[in-house]
Amino acid sequence: MHLSATGIDLRSDTVTKPSPEMRRAMFEAEVGDDVYGEDPTINRLEAMAAAIFGREAALFVPSGTMGNQIAIKLHTHHGQEVICEERGHVFNYEMAMMAHFSGVVPRTVWAEDGILTWQHVQSKLKTKSYHAAKTGLVTLENTHNMAGGAITPPGIFNEVCDQVHAAGLPVHLDGARIFNASVALGIPVAQLTAKADTVMFCLSKGLGAPVGSLLVGSAELMDRGRIYRKALGGGMRQAGILAAAGLIALQQGPQKLKQDHANARLLAEGLAQIPGIKIDPSKVQTNILICDISGTGITSTELSRKLAQRNVLANGVSPQIIRFVTHLDVSREQCEQALDIIASTCGAQAQRA
Ligand code: TLP
Image 1 (cartoon, rainbow, N blue to C red):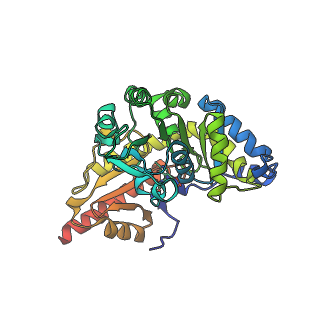
Image 2: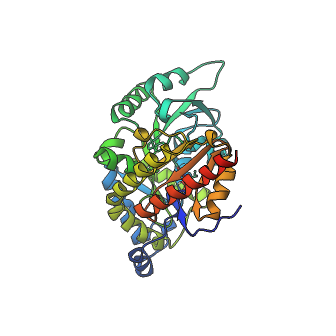
Image 3: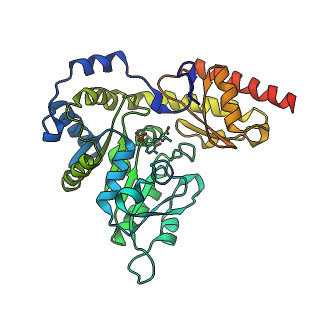
C-alpha cells in the first residue's frame, strides 16, 4: 500500500526532508566528476567524515546498504560466513546481497537487545576446518534498529573487536545510527568505533540529509572500496550536489538528535499505558520504538492502516510488532497527538472485541 507522506510520519528517520539551508547549499555546490575523484564537495565531505571518525579515508556512497555491502566484499572471500545478529540489517534488509555480491552466508546469533557479546560471537566463530565454512567477518550494528535502537555498551563492543582481531578476523560496524549512540552516551563517534576495521554511517537518517552514507576505514580499504562502489553502480559523477547537504547534516545533525530521543521516550511512556501494547520505556535509549501489539487483537498491518486513515504513519515489522521512529520532522506536539490517535484507535478496537 502506498501511504501518503503527509501527517505524522513515524515510519522511519529516512523520511526527513532537506532543510532550506541544505537546498541552498545543494543549489550552490561546486561539483566535478567523482569517478575521477574531482568533485570538491564530495572530497570535502569524505575528508570531514574521515577526520570525525579518526580514520585515514572515507568513501561517499548513495546508501547505507551499499556501504555495508562494499565492506562485506572488502573483508571476505566467496564461501565464507559472516557472523551477525539475527535481526541485523545486513542479513534481513539488504536483499541477500552478501550472498549475491560477496558469495558469503550469514551465520546469525540471537542476542538480547541485539547486543552481540564476545560469548555470542565465539559460539559461532570458525577458523580453518575441513568440514565447515570459515568465518570471514563479524558485523555489529549500533544502534540496533530492530532491537529498538539499542546501544551496544562500549566495553562489550571493544571486547568483541579485540577478541575477533585476536582470532585474525576483521569487524565491520553497521553504524547507520552511530551518532544516535554517540549523543545518548556523550561519547564521540571516533572513540565509540575506533576498534572496528570499517564503519558505515548514514547521513540520510536522523542527521537529515536527503541521500547518502559514508564508509570509513584505512586508505587502502577505501581505495579498493571505490572499485566495488563503481561495480555496484555507485559512481555518481557530479554528486557534490548531494554531498553539500551531507556536509550540513554531518555538522549540524548530531546536536539535534537529543530531541528525537526525548520524543521517543515520551512516545514510549505513553504507548506503555495503552492496553494491549507492550514496550519497556526504560529500554528506549535513542529514536526507535519496537512495540509488541499482540494484546490489541489486531495485526500491525491493520493497525498501520487504521492509523494512516488518521494521518499517523508507522510500519509493521511482523504481524505482532510495529515500529515507530522519531526524527527531525516530527515535533513533541505531534508525538503527543500521535499518542492520542494510537490510544483511541486501539481503544476502539478493544471495545469492538
Ligand atoms: N533502515 C531502514 C529500512 O531498511 C529498515 C529503516 O527504515 O530503518 N543499516 C541499518 C541499521 C539501517 O537501519 C538501514 C536502513 C540501513 C543500514 C540501510 O540504509 P539505506 O536505507 O540507506 O540503504
